[in-house]
Length: 205
Ligand code: C5P
Image (cartoon, rainbow, N blue to C red; front, side, top):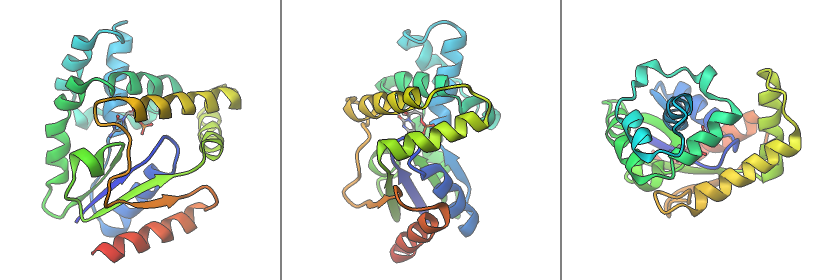
């Protein structure tokens, strides 16, 4: 069974993907980490605006060496969304994602274009969302918890900018797949959101 989970930043999709993967005993890929890793490489080279450098970084990416802790910073979220708007970068990361999804027992993938582009035939597709304010609160708490000193207003502005860039881009924009089920987590805590997600997946099995 392949479970595809998409949605904007801090919608809860990562938490739900992890919990669904644990529940079904499936491998999980947070595809945002791929774009963050590419962003990290070109930022370190001082070449964020260089498309060819980002394509090269994407081609050489070693998925076994991704460090989620180091990659989940606000700065790399922003850099990820810059490189992710480039069609050639996305193309360079396709094969790796397809291979992950094709594992014998199935897989859980979360990102922006899983149900629309990467796994259009996934059995279960969720589009997870929440209001920008709720998402900014969650992300703010998470960043403070990691020791990043950042104001709530800055986090909210970042989220709005990233939503806009991810939704407006030509290459695989953030959009709900026609056959995805919408799950708004604005008023749900984690157990309630997980119960709702599980019910959606069970209905598709
Ligand atoms: O999910 P996360 O916040 O880690 O993603 C960082 C950025 O990577 C997103 O804002 C988006 O621009 C990009 N991304 C993407 N497609 C995916 C996953 C992430 O374009 N499947």
